[in-house]
Image 1 (tube, one colour):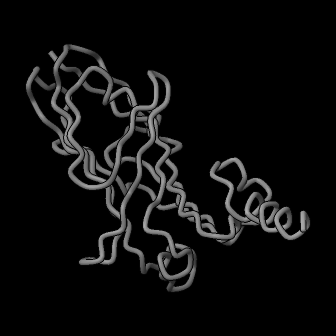
Image 2: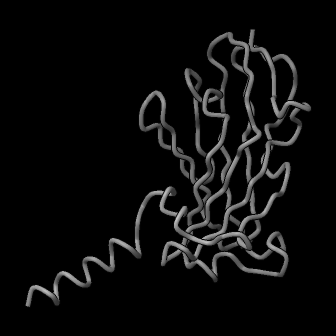
Image 3: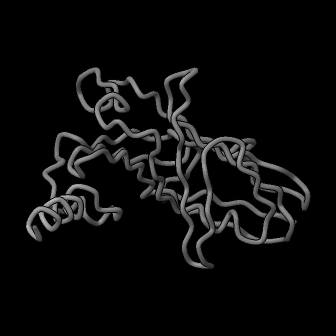
Length: 179
């Protein structure tokens, strides 16, 4: 009797890990795409005033050819969320953040989670966050290693897009001042 309970439990541990680090066990070479400039900050300018607002936006069509062939990510992974890892976290700290589409969770001062949610109307994964600047600061956002993780079940049914925020300089930084 114990085997009948234990085997499904062990299967679940391997089939449904929650951490992106579990992807290290997978051979995803053909499931990684490099597409620059998928996300934007608008309006993007060198100086803002306290009270100004910007939108951080990211949209990925579910059906695309980013991985070499036409592919519908949602149909392949059967998941309606995608996780974003980005260097723009400090843009949110100390400012007023309103999520228009997607999800944003501040877990701690050092850990944020952002998720693109699937939009059935336009067949895209979307994240739109409005940021209202509340304090003066000099921002230098490192946007070199922005990654979008589309993870299905089992865990190796995954796709990763490496991208950047449009408008970065040659060092993959977006610099601006709020005064």
